[in-house]
Image (cartoon, rainbow, N blue to C red):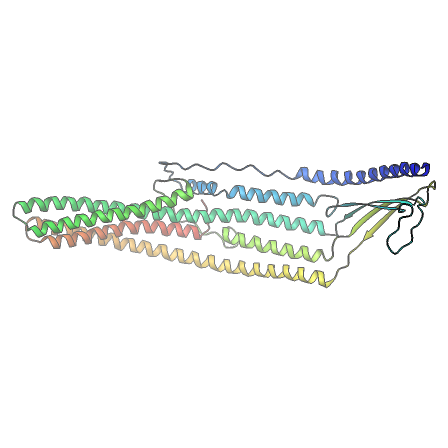
Amino acid sequence: MRAAATSMREGVLVMRIAHAAIAGLVLATTLSEGRAQERAPAVPMDSPVPAPVVGQAPQALTDLVERAWQLSRQATAKGARAVELSAREAATRTFFAGAPAVSLDLRRDLPRDVGLPGTDASPERGKNEWEPGFSAPIWLPGQRDAQRRVIAREREVLSAQAQLVRWQLAGEVRDIVWRLGAARVEVAAQRARLDAARALEADVARRQRMGDLARADFWMAQAETRAASAAVLEAGGRLAEAQASLAAITGLEEIGDVQERPATPAALDDGHPGLRAAREAAEAARSRLAYAQVTRRDNPTFNVVGRFDRDAYGGPYRNTVRFGFAVPLATEARNAPRITAAAAEATEQEIELERERRRIGAEQRRAAVSLEAARAALEEHIERARLARDTFEAIERAFRAGERGLPELLRVRAMTLDAELARELARNQVGAAIARLNQAAGDTP
């Protein structure tokens, strides 16, 4: 009994020593990683989202794009991704390349007269052995700097993607703004047609009562009024659809007139958001390839193991410590898949960069040609509308004098209204072409 009690006290003492050693190693590791975590910024709170506003009418395209950007919550998403990159960068400042590990091995005699099946039971002599251990991966030469370069390139990719998303939102806003403008022009033209049709119907009704016109002429005037009323409703539906699209992307249901001036195309090697995003993606792929070429083996492992053991009850403890260092070998089975995959990604991104360069150049040329064509077409529509208006005024005077019939008046009036609508739509088309040119040039309000 005395021997058993002595063994228990010694076992408790050794256990406390082992626990203290392990706790010290864990504390050192925790403090090292804690300092890195303190430098990593916290995840930002959600940015406020602008509420839908009715009746506001900002004149600047910048206001609309800013509202679309805030409503899309892209700033919050990119901020969260930036926090991730900061945390990864902070991890490169830790002492170890990965998470350390602690271990504890125990070796004792089995109780007296106890043996495993097929073995002889041996007496309990008091054999006692404790081995607390600590191991941690360490950085390879150049690995830390290569990983930091990868993170730096990914930070540039994140910035370029944010600029790209804002530019794409600007394109959507521009498209909706000019669709809304075309719908407004059509609604105004159809309402003018309806007002003219009602006035003509009233005049025909008066002259029909006086016996100057036939009953069929009155029916024809009524049909024209119904057609104009239906056209107003159809144009109003298209206007409501454009307003709904505007509200979905900006939170506004109505805006004032938005005008743009042609911007100077951004240099293809510098300012265009689409090209910058493709270029930064290619640079990031090259940095990942460089990282794969630097880390041709898994991280070496440093080990510290303490040993406290005795051979029998009452015997002295032998306290030793062992240091170890394990270096994994660089093999083709490990390196070839990683390096070739990174090289393939870098090649794909280079090809995508060249494709984006060609696409942007072609888009800028198409936008410039489209603007010139829209301006030329506007000049033709202006002249056409002037001629149609002069013809209508002449036919209207002849109709009131009884020299022309109602069918001819209605035909000329429809031609005039179509010409004037085409003129105003052509004006809107010039503005839309300028917006497309600015979008192709990489201009972001």
